Length: 293
Image (cartoon, rainbow, N blue to C red; front, side):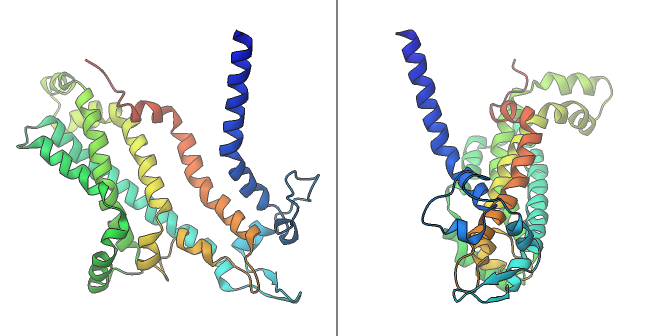
């Protein structure tokens, strides 16, 4: 009976794993297919068996390519395809800058709230967190009008400022709970040895807070990297990012699903790589796992 339960558990676990990972596999596999294989009525799942893999889709999203119309003639692809490189660079710049600013200022704010007596602290923290309860679409019109009046549309600074303000409440909330777990005696002992408060923060507190900073950075990157609505309305030209740009990867006569899949794979990779690099800190950070009294 015990063996049967374990077997049933692993079978169920395997089915759940397949259910959630198959869409990812399909996107990756489609990125290596020719257009005829992608739109085939018979699904082609296994490379080198059902279809011959090709890297043409990856070449096409980074360089100007040739595409086939519905009538079979070959024409030059639109500049939207070759422009993917610029949009990817824009996403890296905007996401990286906004994440660094949010983590930096959020960490300082969280430390101040945690270590000093602030009137109505609990109400203040609830207000900080409540700003994350509004979906971006709610503030779209006032933000659009404000950015248009200040000349921040189609600029790096505009989206960096906006994403920083969106991520800042989350960083403050997470880091505040983490700082509460770090005993104040560490800093007091350091200051008794002659350190200033800033030296104690830099040499004692920040090393302990790295796991939480890494965790908040991951979530901030995901929010900024995937944001679509505001980027689509505010930055549609010079500083456009990848999410609103993916739907423009089309051919003359039909949707180029292979190129869209290749662009999606390239777009996902940076976040996956960064999360993998900070994986050792991630679990400790999201569980506020510093030093317990």
